[in-house]
Image (cartoon, rainbow, N blue to C red; front, side, top):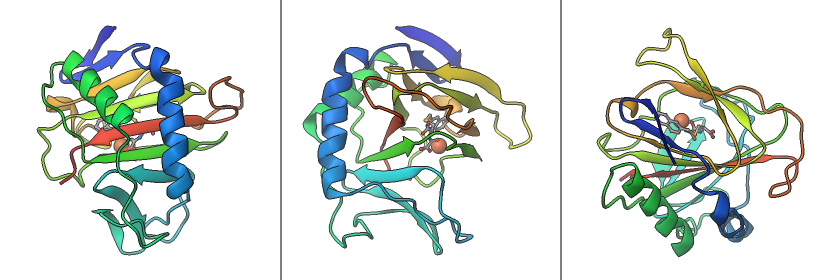
Length: 203
Ligand code: MD3
Ligand code: FE
């Protein structure tokens, strides 16, 4: 599967393809409890991506800022636990990329409708940047932007499609990244959207 992208970053092309239905059933179960919602940026604007979480911690944003929370602010209840199928899958993917004993405590679930984008940012709300992030793309394809250590650095464009997994660790962990607007389309697994899972060790 292995396709090295940069030091610390490896694409496992199609690694999730055979597990897609299981992963999407788990997403369905989680989002029945913690529905997708458009969180507010600190500036007060709704994000174009719809989000949910599972795990002991979930990533949230509101007018107070970006952070991890043990509680879903929508329900006031803890986030649903990470389903065992998702946990096992993330652990296997990390091991495949050379990160043994990856035990995520947070899984952010992003849903992209046509036109949804994510501008360049760094993921730096986690406590330990030596732990990798495992990302899984499901459904419609997208163009991923893989930048450098500074916002101004030129970003490479990497197509990611259904079943692709990327493990981001080591020196790649703090690189700027984003995605271009999702194009219209239909995918048998997800319909008219893209689902992205990111597994993290946040606490
Ligand atoms: C590179 N999500 O949720 S996944 C995010 O497609 C996020 O939904 C995008 O960026 C998405 O924060 C990209 C790929 C990804 C995730 C985390 C990274 C790439 C990364 C962390 C460091 C470097
Ligand atoms: Fe990110």
